Image (tube, rainbow over all chains, first blue to last red; front, top):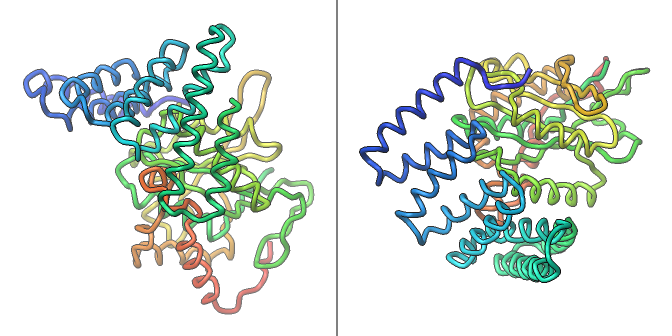
Length: 166
Length: 226
């Protein structure tokens, strides 16, 4: 059977209530916002998780991890608007920190998914394909700069081809 | 009745992953040889007549953080598939450890990921759920429940099966306490570690070596009778 164990579901919602209460007073405690976001993500309450990360982004606008986290949640929610937004946030994360490989993969995943959606304009499709290709190059370069083994480089190149086709 | 056999290598990695991140859910994939011909010798059990045996030769730990977020799951699965193909392996299952000690059922996230993996399995898939309560008894038994997919037109139901068998049986079980005692679990690499530092590889070569040494130290190794 599916579904979180009812007892722990109860404890988790207690934790959620407590954190919400705490954060109305101590809204600058970014660790608590993160913890609350994690609790919401664990419950698949993605919209609430987005709200928490939005608070983090307001207070820490140059933190690449928060941009990437925000994008991860948007991407998980799915749908054209969310994917477009996630792509923007992944790009911003990569811009803030070009070593954030999750952000780079995120750009690749979101842009190639968007490019494959039927109902987009030819320009949007072309832009997304360009972005996907850029992300692939960045990822490959990043792996090479980290001096990973040659077989890893080859495998990664093949993986990137497969991810681009989606 | 289907059955799962776990190699020492895969057991070492799953256990290490669970123990290294005790306060969070963890998950990973299971690998089996891609070719229909099974490897003979090395204490692997012979095929039972008329039964399916899923021979898990290796495991790749996936995540220990925000495991339900999707984009990196797709990337990780693609990377592991590529890795598997290049080594004559294929993904044959999924393991999952829930966050809470007493939560030992298949939750929504575990089912969804397991479904996805089963859909991509040409044959024989399994779901290995870590039984957190049995982690105190790894000297005497494996801490897992096994589930097999029952496929209907639009869904997959996971039905509990027999407990898995460990390579080398009772002597293999001594690996668990050994991992705990030596704190070997600290060296486990999962896909999250890889994305944090791409120089870390999910093949866990260091753990593989230790398991090999452990295996060689088992006295009087012979094929285990069924």
